Length: 381
Image (cartoon, rainbow, N blue to C red):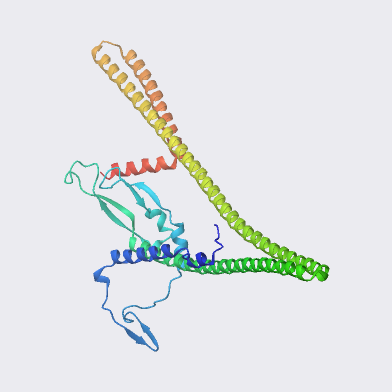
């Protein structure tokens, strides 16, 4: 920022942050009017307790204590704000700006209520075609609690803004004082120059009137000029030192801002890399789960095909035996032994497939749990 050397301009410049402070106060008042409930507003009473005057009825409010607004500011700063689509939104495809109850529960548990929540099925063609979808243990966000934390965070920001305004006023006063010093130095230099002109005029008149004193007057003039140059050099040095100090302060402020911007950029890059890595891991896990499920379905299809083949062969042999009643008992026994051997091979193949499927299920606890739940559901009807 540039500083003006005019003390009037420095004094007339408005203190920074006054407009922001007024805007924040207006937002707080408007939000309180919006969220205020007429049922929750008790009659306005003023009661005295000792020497303290309370603005509320002490019989209605107990254990009243002030809030640490700095903690509210820290919590509001850490709340993850998301843009998302809700699966059971009444408007399909709408993206909403807000917080997610599962993420908010660990940070502000008093602002999340776990309960059963009903939603209209967005896939239904009409509202009466299907009943409402009921979600168990759904985290419902209490926006009033979030708003109260936001009020505390806003108050903390206002306190910090007031502190910064006081510091800014002090810096402006210092700048005005320095500007006044510069003006005073310039006026002194101007007076000294005028004095020099007057002295030269007096010396010229004295030379015309008193030629005998010319040497003494010239010497006095030289001494005066040296004194003036010394004063001018001292004044210039003080002015340069002051300008160097102000420039160093400006450079320090700009350097601090640049470091803050660099830190914020690095933090955003690290967060983006972490999110990409998490998405990659989730994709790999989904691919592995799908591959295991496809392998299990393939083994099940092979087992069913083998059973169907064995059943078809047995049926064909039975029909051939009924058609050929003249076949000897020896041939029947030979065919029976061959059928038993093939049946045992088929059973062994089926057991082998079942063993492989069991190994696959045991290696994936998630699929094993799903299979057990399906069997229990079938048994229960």
